[in-house]
Amino acid sequence: MEKVSILLEKISQGQSKVMHDLYGSNAIEQKRQAGRYKKLLERFSNVYGHQEAMLFSSPGRTEIGGNHTDHNHGRVLAGAVNLDNIAVVAPNGLNMVRISSEGYEPFEVDLKVLQPVPEEKYTSLALVRGICSRLKELGHAIGGFDACIDGEVPNGSGLSSSACFEVLIGAIVNHLFNDAKIDPIEIAIVGQYAENQFFGKPCGLMDQTACSVGGLVTIDFENPKDPIVKKVDFDFTKSGYALVITNTGGSHANLNDEYASLPNEMKLVAAGLGATVLRQVTMEKLLQAIPTLREKVGDRAILRSIHFQGDNARVVQQVEALEQYHFAAFLKMVIESGYSSFMYNQNIFPIVDVFHQGVALGLALSHLVLDGEGAWRVHGGGFAGTIQAFVPQHLLEKYVATLEPVFGKGACHILFIRNQGAVRVEV
Image (cartoon, rainbow, N blue to C red; front, side, top):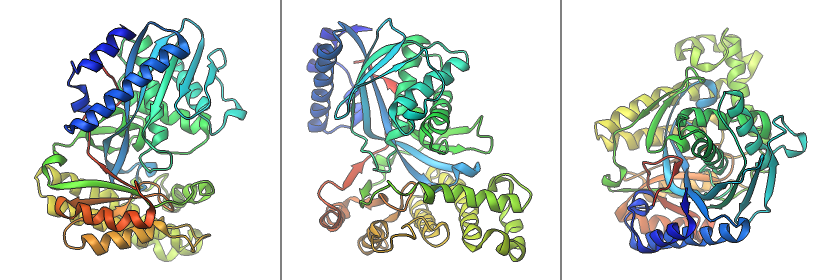
């Protein structure tokens, strides 16, 4: 813990390289982030009255390879990005978590109750309660704390604001009450548990792992209780390309059934082949069984299973291409993954609303601008929301100028992969 006054002084004087590590070398952006931390520190003092505090940052994430593979124990390639949630935190000596987030109503979670509360389903309260419950169940210490949070990972952006929040809470409890001894992967697994069992969303583990570990990582979920996480040795800043995530709009409000259908249909195919998940099945076995599977599971489930097998294998090839600095080969596979999502996985637009096809339109515009020079694909869950593009610097202005008039000013987020996951920020 440090005095709030000292933290404010350090940030004002720029005594730490933390702004460069977390937010890049742009002086204007570093100054903006310093102002963001100062404002949050001042708000924390006014709201809770603490004289000492800790600072935390948790990144959003971008999925780069392996679209809808994690929930069937597949492989993914993902990275932490420079959009983050930051928090100012102090223990309060109570058995109560009190959180005030910029733009949201403040809330409290009484830690005497560590079972799911039905009325809290789909709320941040459920996530906090679920994380603390699971950490205690695993033998870790928990306790009450006060936090002011400022988030720059937009809801519905496809950059996983929920996982970012979950691992932020996990990191806070880790540092305040456990001497920072809990492994980042365990924090990710706890976050997934809270989202599955308390929040009520059947998510995979990719989002939490990428946010918690940081950097560019490939994750193998063959054993989801002990996923294999490997840092990928590649520096995107030297590639000559920008990573652009574009929010094409559309609401996720009525898409729960669409999202649930993806893992459910894949597992239905796996069950038809005597397995639990598709990772236990080969492409050859799947293709051989199609004649008998069609009437049992339907054609869409088979097509989605073909996508899984292709994208799961492609992740290995993408990692190899990056580590060997064969960036052109990597870009080719990004495009192949995108086409597989469109043709086989069918998560580009919901079947109940063919009038609105923002993701498909964004991909079409990306193709027109980047064909032969970049790469583009759906990003994350699909059906609505975001697309991902790797844009050469000389086309970046044209790319943004083509997409933002369609999807709105500020729809294109120009990002980079940051090396830090959910961390205590020591200025």
